[in-house]
Length: 554
Image (cartoon, rainbow, N blue to C red; front, side, top):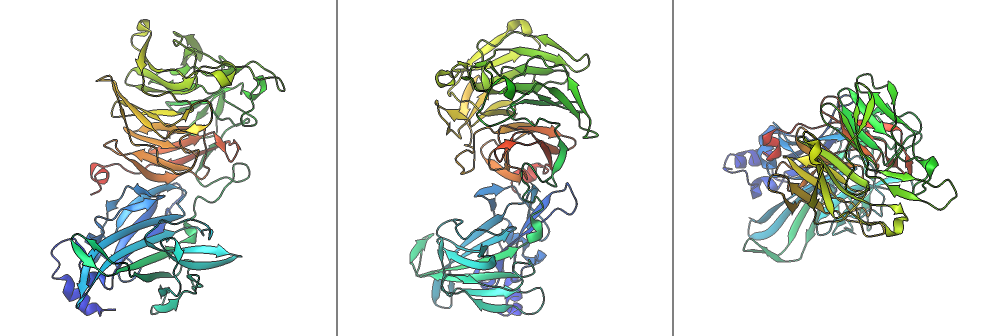
């Protein structure tokens, strides 16, 4: 390593934020995932540049262009005094990564390419977990009950990899990986040590017009086992720290949900085994939860028990739209029928008023209020036999201020069901869903602009799981659209509407649930199917701030 006195004198000559060879020789990118300081708060992910695994304000400008990533998705971040910081709500991710390619540089007469990677880990990985290609990564795995550091390049073990360990106290210690790229490092599993490893790839190449004979990789690693604040709760026997309230029995999925005033409303829904339908598997309750005391549930008059139903609210009333009713009993052939119902519920008088039916029945659709107009998109029309159920070819709009005008039919460039819809910037976003007669998931996002009356495509839904995009839920808070699905990740649409940003995760990943606004700047996950059964747990996570500077990544 180069003496620190030489490094400090070299820094004086730096005139730009680009990382030059002098500093790169002995300083690295580090990541740390720090749990929330208080219950209900947000955790912090920090990226910083230093020789040692602690931030130094003198080097903060070198983190300006770093992108912090979870599951390959960029996490919104801002520049702090010592580090680049990202808020994370709910359960912390198992891994957070960042990297920086410093390009081709010269030391003496030798040229080489220099690439840095950094990882923060909050949980132990299985040795079979796959890593990205063409880069160096250090990770913590567990083999036969033993926690081991593993060094991989291009997804393959780096035999005899050089490792530098930074213990909680004392000087750094050198270590070497075995032939499988693995090593036992004191303090790593307890989160009291940090380390970096390096690897030289002798493959020559050219970058920015400069030739290089080799690439030198440096990968840092930190581990914080206490950062698993979200726990590993199951849907049945544990209460996660993000728990906000509990549904009275029976818990439901594929229900209607809305928030109006201080109340959270839950309308009917599916109970019992997945994909089993009868008159007994549709909940016979319409309830509301007091969001202030988080305990009081009040039963309300149920107009009709349904599942795959939409429930939305304006500033005075609730609106129930469509849904599916089963006519068969348990053990009989299924007879499932979509309905065209449209009704208004007055929370003051607790009465229902029938409004104009939709042009055709539909269920497993979704709806949202934009301005004073209710938009309904997606779904299918069931008429006893689900195998032959057609998909509507149009989105519907209903002007609440001019009910006599009835439903407006808007041709749409898609046919999907089990989707979600939301609003941002006055536009309708239709997210994911199923296509065809089977369970093929489409991650496409369609966007309708009411002002121009035109459709466009938005950014596809992120996530690599085969069910991601099915049974999602979405809602806008402070004109930013949030959605979640099977992975449990919570995503926010960028301010420009062209990308999805990871901002947090539920402790209980769920589908066919409802994402709704909670008290203050919180987001709720209500009901849904978690690990194959309905969960009664309602979770709440704090939402990160969304100032213009943060949205711009400044």
